[in-house]
Image (cartoon, rainbow, N blue to C red):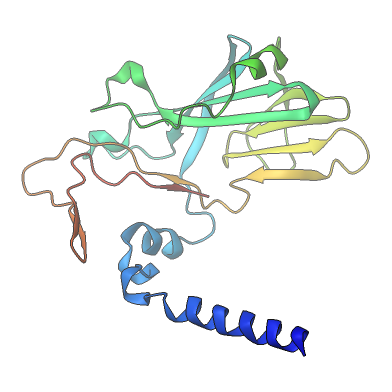
Length: 216
């Protein structure tokens, strides 16, 4: 009897919790511009290619450029910077950001303490980049060491980053932009007539530097 009462109490509590949720206080995808933009992208829509790959401060660094530069919109032709860091135990950290040497309108917010200071001691300082032409690609890809049995590959065109096994069928274990859906909305200065403001209920986001979404 006590067990039955306990179960009934849990059901009542769960029902009250569910009823307390107010759907209208949360935006749906149709009410969220970045969600609609992300869902509307078709596979292969990413127009970026990797260029100028090198080793700097122990990381692989590269520039991401649009295949076709839009000369009518200077903000959209600025290259992005990609950096790939490798740590002990097969850990890889990938970062993509605006090129700060080109003086973007502001610095993008970075979440602090993503990597604790002690973790830097486990960094593997990369010394070289190998090249390999993947079947079907017109340009070589860049390949770096990750750990015994694994390596990371940066495909230049189409742009993709993945980690794979070195031996056997070289199975991919993780990949970024394998379907060509990656997008990175760059910071821009507002020109006359631009309206990036978003409103939901009582909240207003003025978005002074345009949309800032990224997805893959």
